[in-house]
Length: 292
Image 1 (tube, one colour):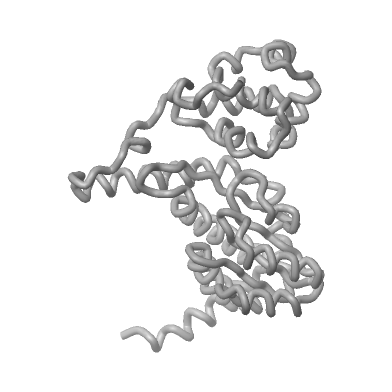
Image 2 (tube, rainbow, N blue to C red):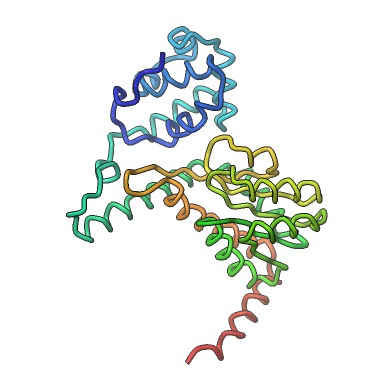
């Protein structure tokens, strides 16, 4: 039986432990036992061999190695190294409740702490090969469509404003009906960037399905862990964010989504030199008369 989460050592969870938490509900019973043991005995696991962990968790050595490989590690040993480097005591400023009596300065500090943690965790979680692939697709795209709804729609619009200055055919669709129509008429060589924290909204999944049928490449920016959106994506860029009582992880993840968009835009800018430099210069000159 799974140990109650309240009985676990109260660490500020590392990225390695967050990954296990995110995928636990998506794997079979045998792998859940391994994940539960690691989550409940993190410090001990650092010193265990794969054989010892297999015996304690009631799993095979091969299944343990495969589990961590599927999570993006080279194997169990690589996971232990990452775990030992990031495991630490809790940061109480992230986990305490915000009370109605807290001054704005205390609220500011808590919000900034969560945002900084989100950025650091996402940076560690990003697959560099996936990031490189995403940049290649965007740099060579005949057309780029950014799709998002709700809070993710704001990120999609931000991406549109950034990429349009590179002289690329870019659009942002924040409405489910428009997204469906746009994705239905895409062609091979076009790229769709779908931004969705949950990866499970109906509008997003419909757009992804239509884009896939049209032959367009799909880059998904979503939370770490499996979701319905994953099966449509050619490239996955995952965000990791802590959840607090005053701020949902979906809101916190927006910070990481915006940072990812910036990293993609700058990388595409560099990949398309010298054309991108000329386009950016022309775009800036066009705004000169708009300022006093």
